[in-house]
Length: 476
Ligand code: NAD
Image (cartoon, rainbow, N blue to C red; front, side, top):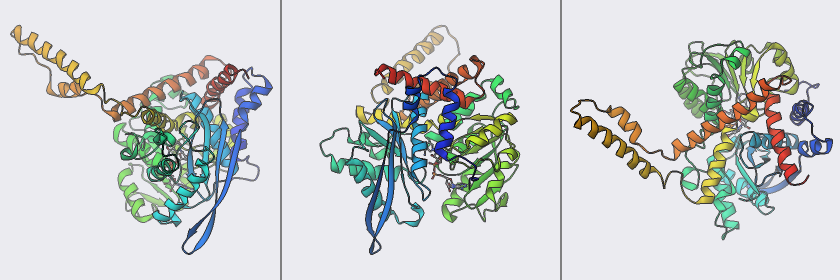
């Protein structure tokens, strides 16, 4: 619960925006144009369930159409409201600009607790919500392209795509109306893991700069760093899994809805995820210490804190007690504007949401391009690439034999070198490149200008500058 003196999520985003534009030289008119949310559509629709009609409320907000289509997830949560959807839509505009995904910003939400419904009921509700949005072009391959967010995933995206195609039978690009679809239904390899993978790539990039690491008071590499994660959903689970399995990080705390688990020797992410799937929460899990008031574990001593659940969890009430020197905002808006200030004063380094969770929209961009081009990435090049590599290997081995040498390439090297990249490898490569370039553009501004206090302001400066240039190019 936010304290009464805490701004709303949208006010927090606006305050962070204002901090950045104060350092820019934009005309007040353009500043206002970029800040405001262009439109929010509210829909109330009825679905007959369990013998009577239930009415649901949904939103689709379009923050900025400086580029189209606009892009942003659809969230299913009982807490969804207009303020939240507008804040999230604004973040999408800035996020897309920061990672150079050619979209404006949008977001959608449905006030619903999906856990209270059977899959066939959720399908009816989702299709009806999608119908309302599709008929107003608020879902459309060239105008507005949703994706998964909290409470939604591949399954819902497949229903939405199918609904669009039923209503637009001659649109050859119908699959591009939504991203995050299953691989067998027009999706792309690596989309489910993309946001968590992006968090991993973001941290790897951060740890490539000793100067930035030192700013947080940490040193060395990711290996051995103690991590607390809040939310073991899509984003939190993948981030925790990859960081522990591939980078040697120790997941010492996992915070969920019903409490938290703590173990300074490291928790088994996979086993806990399976436990949550079977039991609906972390309570009762055999290893680690169970803490009933899970939110207190955000204050646990650790190196890296990854809030990956929902907004406003680090606020005026607990910010002063947060011990992690480095926070990476995997969720959108987990730190309120007031908490941000307290943490900045303490010297905490915050890798901001706009950048940290941009892996999802980046791979969504790849999926949209794949849908429009109607061909899987790598299909034309893969075998040709392998054939060219084979030529080099054969030639080297022939030269070696002709010289009477016993030298040869190791079979491990050959296996790796001879394999052409498949779609998943290409997606990861594109994501890695995007996360690295975006971090570099932020840190150049952070360190280069002298008046930029942190990475969040830097991220806003890069993003707003790009959105402004786009509006200026349109003559605004
Ligand atoms: P999800 O629904 O898959 O997972 C959310 C997790 O948080 C669940 O495990 C849930 O039990 C847990 N949770 C909910 N309330 C909690 C609480 N009060 N305390 C602790 N845990 C709680 O959602 P997700 O897709 O992983 O999204 C998480 C965050 O990441 C959201 O802020 C979302 O906007 C952001 N995000 C998601 C994506 C994506 O691709 N899915 C992309 C960008 C940003």
